[in-house]
Image (cartoon, rainbow, N blue to C red; front, side):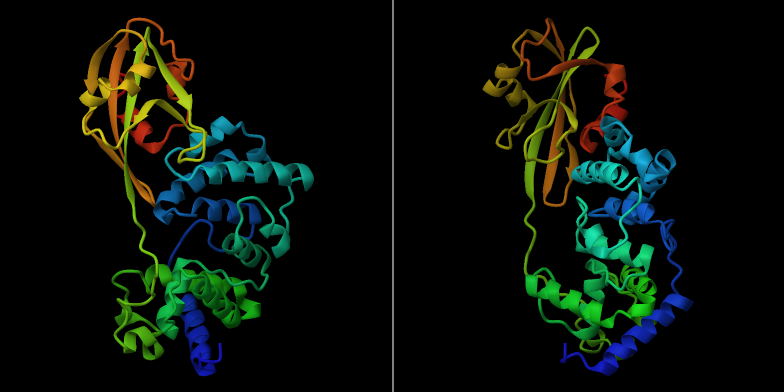
Length: 358
């Protein structure tokens, strides 16, 4: 870290903390929170999720589960239903498993050392540092995308932040800058600074307290830094959902395997990216292998799109009326009332909510 002049480092820390004290008006319900349970809950919910999206879920969860023991004692299907629409459902499973572990093994007392926190299921270096710093004032730097962007621009880091070397450099630099007696303030300040001032696009450079010594600003590299080596290639998948009705019952199953939306429910599904229309799916061998009884076609929806981090799901819903019970045992028959009690992927729950006459 010798190539980052000490006077730059001192300037950065001083001005960041001053900005935080005078000009940081970013307000969130978990800010200044000292309860490790609430910090942990917020951090898990905000993994891969925008603050605006996660806020309502955080409030809803705390109301339903004010303590970690309450969360541990909740039925998993109820948790999944409350999580519905937030995505990355492995987070919900890890949340439940960790709550049970802490409730049983530690009598509901959250671990208080960085090493113990890091050992929890679903907790990585960033989350562990956040809990350790905000709840227990331990000197561990919190490094997320906001932090890496701020450091990259101010100090002129020319190593891709998504590389192993780049991540290590950001982590080491953040830890070196961290004022040990003000770790929580510094961590909160640099994350808020990245979210409100040094934004990915259209950063507020003209009002920035770092402008004088910011490498990217003075070298006109704001649009270049931070560097990234990988370009995410998003694949497109076509899902054809079959809403098969028989005597006011519907056929569903639980998604298993190592794919998206594990443990969530879904209607009969045929995935076929090569087929361009629902009509062609209805006459396909895949359809005939599943729908093994006569039926009447009731409705074909317009395609609905859900954007995930690495893929785009395009879903079409085909509603049919069966003339006999489905013979395929991979699917279970349930009532309309049960449908509204179960957790589905967002693309399905969105369709259900706007088609109440299923």
